[in-house]
Image 1 (cartoon, rainbow, N blue to C red):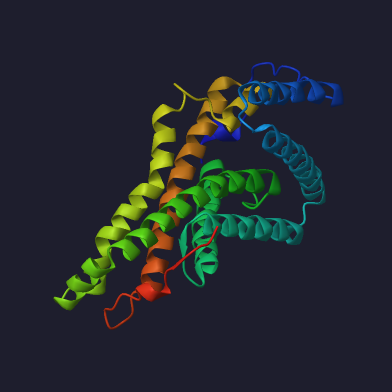
Image 2: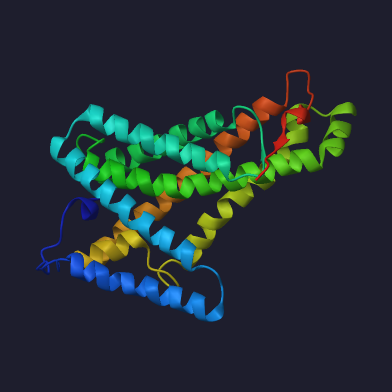
Length: 278
């Protein structure tokens, strides 16, 4: 356990400035400014901006009330329902973002997300931060949300790369299998390329954090009055957590696709790959 993450600093904590409806209306003016730019340049984005802004407000207010209720009630069963909904929505989003797909892909995405995200969340809350119990909603829900938000992107990119490669290079892979290569030998290179692509956004984010970008969790803690060094330590844990979860998720989904599209007779079942009609 990291003591610096478990205890607050002795420095005086600034008062958190409240935000009311008037301040939120003023903030909406920033979106109106973006809409004005769209109108002046004839970009045609004003309707999409309006819908996105309304969804942002409604979704965030809804989750705010839900989380307040979950935190106050502190029920493991209610927490389990929230976690299952988060996992199901993330799996659906990951499976729907690819052009190619196969039957059972959402189930495979769900399995990969459950295995990678819950394992990583447990390691962070139980072993690193030292929360008791490790599934305390105040820690588990936001950490799991950050993991899922990044992991589903990695899994989606990994799926898209892998399925596209298996489809486009079908004859090359089948030739390797016909010449005596095992299914693992034929699939190893596409799997490696897919996992690498799924990890690119996370690696890029880690490369520029603190120099080009200040992550949301760190910024939120600083705005809430936390010591910047403490906020930085939490952010380091979060970045490492996201990297581990994304890597595990990409590996798990790659292996599940491998098991689905390569049979025990060392054949590629490329006919199972379909193209989505958007």
